[in-house]
Length: 138
Image (tube, rainbow, N blue to C red; front, side, top):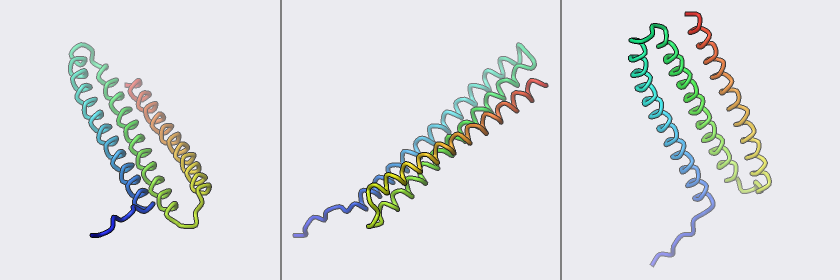
């Protein structure tokens, strides 16, 4: 009878990374579903509004574009988290890396992720503002 193999730490880190990747995929799919549902709702509102007021549908178009920008920003953040988690998992597999070093790398990755998230959110807000200004001029 074969002896049961004890899982190695690498097995656990690989499983952890796989879980993070699957969670990220689910989040991205839910964002895409929200975007689709929003587009359908906006199309219906726009159709009703175009009968009542001529310029009002531009507001709905702007809202749709703003949501698209926000969702793309969120997907970027999700991708960054997966990449940083993968890098952290790889670095933890090195035998000579201490728990303190892994914690420091993780903290640094989180800080970089927050900085990138803020940058992406600023760009999305700037784009929404530009679109709103363009819509107001029409």
